[in-house]
Image 1 (spheres, helix red, strand yellow):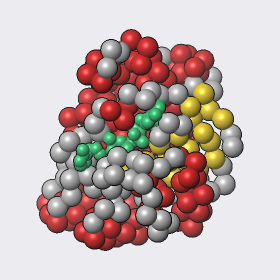
Image 2 (spheres, rainbow, N blue to C red):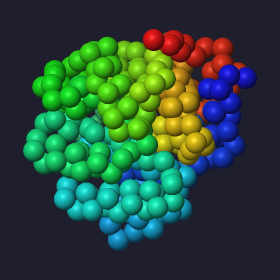
Image 3 (cartoon, rainbow, N blue to C red):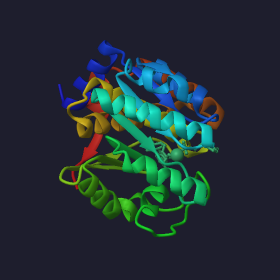
Length: 264
Ligand SMILES: Nc1ncnc2c1ncn2[C@@H]1O[C@H](COP(=O)(O)OP(=O)(O)OP(=O)(O)O)[C@@H](O)[C@H]1O
Ligand SMILES: Cc1ncsc1CCO
Ligand SMILES: [Mg+2]
């Protein structure tokens, strides 16, 4: 079996508990994506318990999509709890370029050293200081335009960076991969990127010693499920339903046969 298929199998066997600090739009979508895929989501974000809970989880994901000051305290507590146990954490810097509040919060969270950074092309590109074409939470730049920034961030900060879009790009600064597939309907269903960030957490929770391979596996699994759902969906509404069914039914053997990963 390829590494990607093996990691899917291991993720389902372990059914990792993933603490998801995500936004109000994504909470339900992400929990369903994780349950369908075979992981165990828990949306726990308040400062009083987020750090303690992180000690129980196999992975933590942090997303600033609907940020407020109280949530930042919960995020920092959870990150400190995860870091103390060597638990991987994934950062999704939603629209961090849009306002000073978001920019400052994203900078502080990035300083805490995520294991994996996952964003759309405009979000990753904006870390280079470029203004880019992002329109709020939606990307306006190509993945290719963000690849150099992704490589530089990954090697400077010793983390994995995943840029998603029509084709996805993953790098740890040394190794890189492109993942093909998915569907142009995916950006028309809200929070599929945010849910992917949580799913990357589940795969990293199954392979904490190899976050690069875990990220490639998660994105490949998502892309194949997205391609399958595309073939039977009639639009964004039915896509969302079929996509969950595909995440639940896709086997490691199908993933092995259909994943399209190229090395740049
Ligand atoms: N044009 C496309 N063709 C195929 N797949 C796509 C396309 N655009 C996005 N995707 C896929 O959709 C998923 C979400 O990526 P996207 O870059 O849209 O995230 P995002 O902008 O953070 O989403 P959101 O903020 O709505 O949660 C990824 O798996 C990506 O590969
Ligand atoms: C629509 C939206 N607004 C803030 S977060 C979010 C979900 C997609 O990122
Ligand atoms: Mg996003």
